[in-house]
Image 1 (tube, one colour):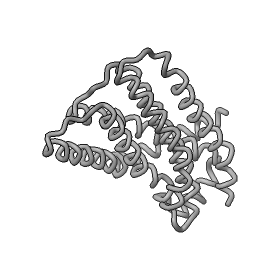
Image 2 (cartoon, rainbow, N blue to C red):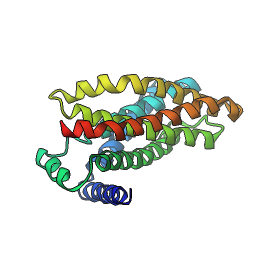
Image 3 (cartoon, helix red, strand yellow):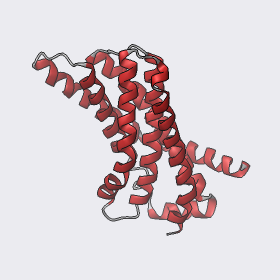
Image 4 (spheres, helix red, strand yellow):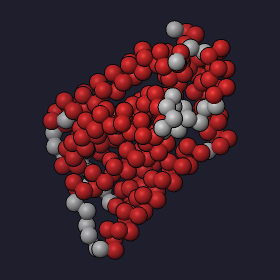
Amino acid sequence: MARLSKEILALVRKEFVLEWRERSAFNGILLYTFSTIFVCYLSFNQRRVELNPVTWNTLFWIIQLFAAIHGISKSFSQERGGRFYFYYSLVSPQAIILSKIIYNTILMSLISMVGFLIYTFVMGSPVIDLPLFILNLLLGAVGFASTLTMVSGISSKSTNSSTLMAVLGFPVILPMILMLIKVSKNAMDGLARNLSYDEVLTIFAIDVIVVTVSYILFPYLWRS
């Protein structure tokens, strides 16, 4: 376990060093998020239409979902083939997948918070229970990161990785985003928090299950 922790820490540090040098993932997702929000603002502002809470909530999570897909889909495709052989001689496959999940979770959490601030600044904020909304936002970031990281690893073995990623990720992402939208709507309406406990626990359970399945199954994918 100590060796695994050291390997994960080293790989996460490597991801941050590469990102600091290239700044491709963070800047790309941030630019996508900002441009999408700005287009939405222009569209509704020109028509002088005030967003109702349901539209505001749905539009926000659609932006978050596609920002996650845009950023995390390249988690494994950017790795050169020879680099995987180098990793194979140094670290365990569990360290590879867990480090990718941790890095993408941190990246998505940061992007989600920045996107939420930009979105509320441009489109206004009808959120009443802000702590519940932020908790839901972070759980969603973990869910998107863990699910799409594992799917990215699977699809990287295919020649048509983008299509395979969409097909494999949809069954897990769909129920998750429906629950995220529901919890966010409860936070926007200021309902009692105990009404959202079941959905929050379910989202948390999905996050744990996806990480566990990734930890168990990725070594078999690695050997292929």
